[in-house]
Length: 150
Image (cartoon, rainbow, N blue to C red; front, side):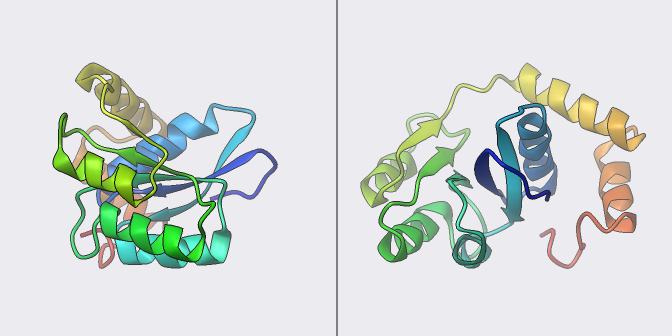
């Protein structure tokens, strides 16, 4: 992740392609920069401590420490932390729990076609044709480590 001026965002999701997609969307903005990534809640808390981003985009359902628990831990240590929940589960009780834990809002209405367009654009930039090739290419380029991509 690059370091620059603007709104600094930490992307948290257990799917590497989703994290890369969020980072790719952020990269199109002049005043927003993705400063870090995490694939689980425990790593998100550690990354927050280290990077102190302006905003966290937090997935709710992740293996190990989930998004709600990570939100609670971050807000306990950093009461002014700004966390936006990212989930595809409409009406999920976890959303309510995350808001009670201190998340400032959530995103539910991203269309499947929008995701497909972003994935297609990522594949084009990586010069791959499917998710498997994307993961292999990302591993070879040092973007991800397969032992952490679970």
